[in-house]
Image (cartoon, rainbow, N blue to C red):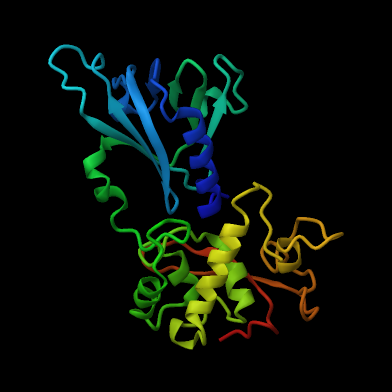
Length: 282
């Protein structure tokens, strides 16, 4: 499922394929933007913001016809949600996903870029980006990362379960369910424990940031420390608790349990995984 590291990798791939390229065609398969034509616009950059993708474009002198001053800037804003993805193909390449799930097609002389099953897709003036991502907290993988500010935002609601506070993107941006579960395990904290019961909140966030950064280079996500250090003979795979219901805890051998946590701040119930011995139920 897309989390901060997945979005970071997607942005890097899109930036490599599109930055500096002029669109030869665009096709937005959502009613609101179905008539929008960005052919002739040049992609300046693609950047991640938490779990959001911002594809920034500049209008060239030819785009838009007479009277165009060539200085307008637009942003294609997307969010993958649970099912979405962006994929890059050679021009005319065969898609790996069903055509009916395509929501955006961007063509250049060197690549076809297709967004499938995007949870959010809109085109806005670049100057208005703050309207769609300004509510986000510090980005664990971004240049704006501010540990003290993230801790301050989370501490402002001491009775909130830490597992919900970590998923609230207004507190900090980039953590999804996998890193929520794994970070709580490393800190020995049950996801349902209140924020006020977390002995080292900064340490928990530091673990989350470390895990996210360690997975930027590969889509094969891992969180176990021995694997992250690249110990010889240790396969690059495996989680501490996520998805390991009934399997023995890597630390104490107690069977890992699965539960549900929520709702809060409009979030629906989400699955949690934890070790009942290493992370006592509050």
